[in-house]
Image (cartoon, rainbow, N blue to C red):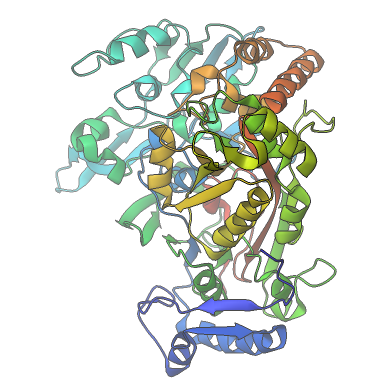
Length: 615
């Protein structure tokens, strides 16, 4: 596909039920925009549209105490199933982890969340003692029964809730993709894992050697061996604390509810459309801690947070311009030259409207995973290497307006221990063709069929940008004689296919859970194969040995050396096509205050503020 040279924006017809500002109010002005099924808008005409949208914003502004942004579809609100960044964003609105990332601090550091303080850790990092905040309470829910007035009750969080939640993460009947955090990490947990595979209900009363309640609010966790990264796990959504009453009461329907301790409560969930969260006024963090505020002041938290599912990127943009969305998490390729000027700054017409742009290098890596169980790809090293050599990274970066960074390994820039040497299988068409011949597919021809080798590629989104970039990938492999056959799915179906090992190849990314090499290298550890984070089902005993060695090595320089050796192995074996790293650009409107971009945007809405003018 040829690169687009005329910088225009394509607006396809939004849904007939486009709801401006959360209400089905439509003015004649709105209809005149929506009823155009397809039109191209130049940069000059876009400025006229900005003016129109500014007026619509005044006409259709939602409640000023409501913050609205878009979010992808979710399959579950169960923390144990929070396999994607989208799930974690929603789940941690209501649930809390023991620790969280300091919203303001850079470089990143952890602070207490559900915990009352940072944990006590012994000298060799094998014993952690957590004190749970005694003021923490689960939000009222019918699972706890009713009070004397007939209203649902809540209850305080206790040490046994943390122990239960960690056991549940390991329970094979729950089948959590986050079980790798605890299975062979906490002393004695593997025995519980084995018991959970047996028929019948899992026995949660089973004693785990490494989990002990020292008192009603104190838990001691002992590890099987030293693990330097263990403390980061308690800021991950998987380890959020859940009450056993809710799991037992709702049963298989538990994922449709949220019974947590957090700053917001899930009020309504219209699947594939909208999630409504309301502020939990009883949350202890409003009165003390980093999210506390002065009720008599002028900077107040939002009373309602709305996440909307808007698949079409043109509709997302239209909603942001109209004021229906307060925040836009990305700028599409087609919109780039309208939003950002030649100097890389926000266009003045947007600045004049109070819109702000934020940009940071993202702690993310995007890749095409190759299922190592697949008979074509898994046993053919030369083929996997050839697929990397055929990927034109420079062309890919240009396609994304230089918002992408060339990828040369599993660790993004900024991670300590990253391997900086040149990637042996970087773009080289001649080398790709030679490797294909060595792989048994000369000129891309499958000897069994006498036709071109066909490889299937699964995607989890269907946006215009995804489709166009996929066409570009198809063109890369056409040049070496391979037919790349794309299949588009919605996000839950896509994840299910990967977890069930049904995909041959799949395009996906990994967003760092914490800023450490281990979080990225665990994507290749054999004990983390699907449904765990090792989506490619890659197994290499030498990689496993180095991974485990790094985990128990206390000296940072030695640990980084081990990580570099690990990366050499992964680069050689090519279970991925190394796609790109990303620069993140986000937009917000003028009424959002105290926003700060972060690689860990989980439950950060509690820090957002709106300005109130008091009479």
